[in-house]
Length: 277
Image (cartoon, rainbow, N blue to C red; front, side, top):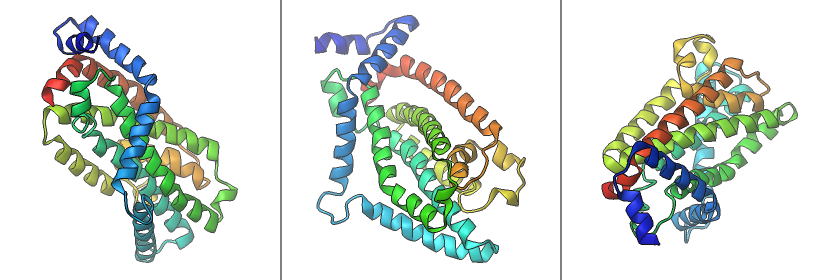
């Protein structure tokens, strides 16, 4: 049975059949969600095996970075610390989730080469693995978010349900970017370096370390920057700020168009991924 499925996966068929197989892969992956979650937990655990704080080492280093940048830039820019430090903290934490999901997505299929070549597991299982792994990391980093919101009193006015919607939109959009990076990286092994460079550039042109009002609300650096909208949908509700309706339009459009195009690419290249590896 596994051999037959493997032959279907790698054989040459028409576009409609490829689409049907891709849909079946996605559908079957939902039955393997438990496996994807277990693999994600194993990834996090194995990365910090033998350490004292485990994944909280990253949280600690991120917290120190937040404090350093917050105090320094608040004084350099002449911004009140109770405004700037929470702003930077939320920006670093949530942009880190986006960056981690996209950059680690480059290894989605490469690191699963052994299992993909020897089993008939749905390929989307490993996409969920990457997403779950970064959500687990986010759960650890929420310590920083809760701390700054509680210390500066934003928890009283934070719109948690709206922020959760923003997180959902962030994960959905980071998901298709991760899958697209995974497909490209399986074929071209220099893609991870390109993706890392793009994300490094993005963090500086996105208001993570600086306030958007320095440019004005309608500046092109903001309006045509998808990462700005991803951050705003999460950060603004937590800091008692309104999210522009246009940001939701951009994020929903990105999600629909992005997943449609990426799934089409996946359907076309699915049977070749094992050969790429």
